[in-house]
Image (cartoon, rainbow, N blue to C red; front, side, top):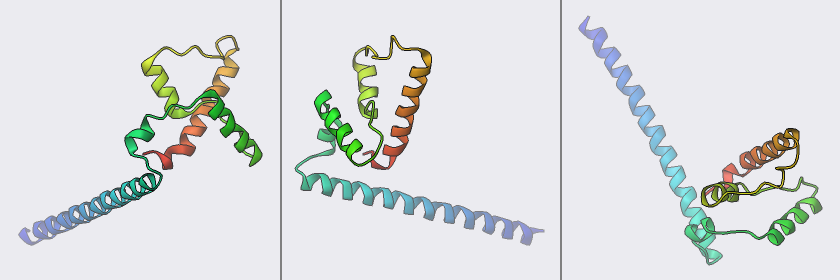
Length: 123
């Protein structure tokens, strides 16, 4: 009976060790990605803090939308990073306020799709 408990304990500890090793590997990968991002930003003369503070003008957004159209992609309605900031910093008057709820749900769906598309690029 004691031998079975020892085997069970060893198997349990082996699973824990594998979990720890996998977690350590994932943390190391995240660290490498952050270091690579920092190197890329540094090559551009930027820091993470500066990038997080970027505020884009309507003209800049339109330029991005024009480039997306030129490449055959759907233009963006909002930048996900700006949506959260505007909501926290000041009330935003929505251009869709006078539109029906179908337009609101379409707008929300576009925001969601863009957010999912940008997840791999978040700092």
